[in-house]
Amino acid sequence: MSAYNAAIIGCGAIHTMHVNAIAKCANVKLAAVVDIDENLVKKVASDYKCDFYTDYKEVLKQNNIDVVHICTPHYLHAPMAIEAMRAGKHVFIEKPMAISVSDAQKMIKVQEETGKILGVCFQNRYNETSIKVKEVLDSGRLGKIIGGKAFVTWHRNQDYYARGGWRGTWEKEGGGVLINQAIHTLDLLQWFIGDVDRIKASVDTRLLKDFIEVEDTAEATVIFKNGATALFYATNCYPVDSPIEIELICEKAVIRLGKDLYIQYKDGESEKINNSDKATGQKAYWGSGHETIIREFYNTLDKGIDFDVDGKQGINAIRIIDAIYRSNKDKQYIYLD
Image (cartoon, rainbow, N blue to C red; front, side):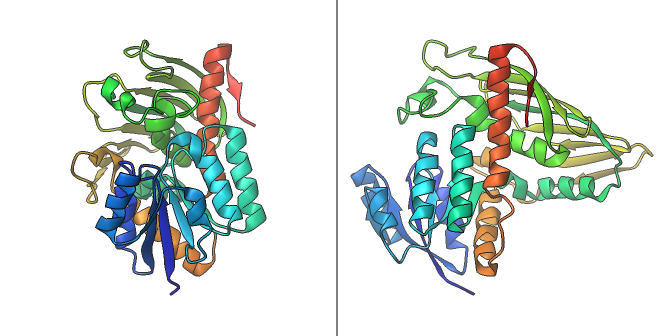
């Protein structure tokens, strides 16, 4: 088993999920952290007993760093990942992999040119219940997927957008509820059902129009290439972060995925799978998949094989989000190539 030295770029709220996951990987050591806030990064480095930098370009020069985890504001994801791969580092990046389809395509091209592994953090694919849904759909036991729906009803207030100064802007966040919160659900929807053919959608800002540029509510009708139709709704206007709901209608059963997984078969039988790996605490809605996806990322490096959630997988949700925004503008169906 190879040993890897990792650096985390960005010491905001999400970085702790990466720290905890790295700590549980037998073949990985957290060697450095990076943040432009010198006081913050010094404290974080002291807590984790590792090196620190205030300029990410400096950590990319370090020959002992094998992997960088990018946990920065969205607009920095693509340029940092591209520089890191060109500097000879593997990259594990928080969602979204980029804020535009063109930037995501550039990242994939650099991944191919450099031979470095680019992993995208869609950790909800690694939840126990998500894996079960994927397995039962791929088995063919439920017959053809006819359609589905996915609802994300969460809460983000003015204080949330005020923190950091980059949220709520098209230039730096790249969007609102779609690209920041609901992107995981869109990824699951296309992972479960298949390639998207076309989308008709609308977006709006219902509560914070005077404070943010981006949408806090979105809805879409999604037509898949296999003929299935899905309805999608997401909002940050709900009073709390309610559990995400996904329902899939198949020829022989109905799948309902929320806190737990329910499968109701047309012959009267039913199945319930408890989500035994639920996360707890303030950020429980993130799920507990970070630990699993990061472990699998390093196992991939060790085996010298492709990572399941690479750039070519990560771009799918970006393309869907882009189509939603364009459909809202053009008031018509947008076809995905």
